[in-house]
Length: 409
Image 1 (cartoon, rainbow, N blue to C red):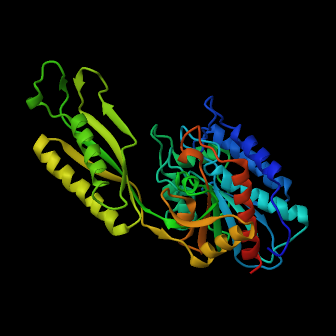
Image 2: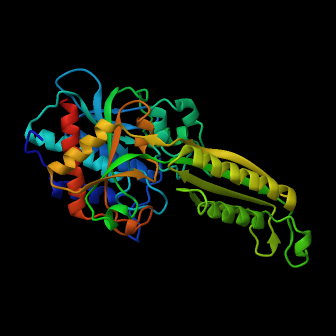
Image 3: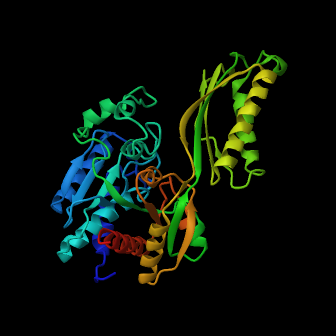
């Protein structure tokens, strides 16, 4: 880096702690579901930080918050970003680290009195987690043009509450159209959320892309009956069928290279201990770095369900919750992350992301890359999620170096 710019590590960790206090849980984690009152408080905090830096602050119609440091020239911006919403039992760093570190990059430039050639911006995307509204990465999906504002506003949570109504309620339905700021490049700084970096000596992950993902919701309908008086052979049990589907999806991970599977939600009606259920709703999260392999896994699940439906006389229907292809990142930006890590004497390894991120959507419209730091124990989506202060500051310095160089290219 042509300057001696460095992140103020104490200020970065203090800001992270301030944000973590909003929606803090007794276990040490965070619960800031998208567009809840806790999310509103987190958004208010973020806007206050951006105002303190004298940035141009814009909010779009899906609630994405953008802070812009104006450059010397007009043109596309270098954008840093992530999200501040969490899952129901989230940690302190997932998403929040990328946003707060982006704020710190702009603060470091303000402190040094430096103005980049290009605009340099930080963005907090709405509803990245998909824990309340579907699909996940919704704010960046709309920003990148994959979903209309109207369709996003029409989404409802599990209680039937509309996304558009919640945006209005918390005061974050902005006037800008999503995508209003053209992007020269996008960088996202994130904890790994897995064990690879920690187990392979630490340092920085230069992320080469994100694996493909399919989220399916299955509704299974059988026949409710008394669990004590209905012989097993006469039952039409969607609960048993759901268990068989989950096991089948898990077994696929042993035969299809790179395949992952998870049943994360299951709802039974009626939910009585002595009643064979009438309806079961379940979700399947299927992922693979290879699109063709993921398609093969999904087809196997659907074929198994078709056979199960006939054999056990259970009606099974499918609904897509999310469907995104494997996403390769831009080689020049991956190399820039490696260069910046080397500049600080940090070990760096190329790796693919197992989780989806807003970068997956941004790669549709501009060159994109991600920076990973180790997650202790590989934990994420867990209140015990943790990354060391040394790693946090190191990754933020890599973000600063890479963003500064891109903004002056």
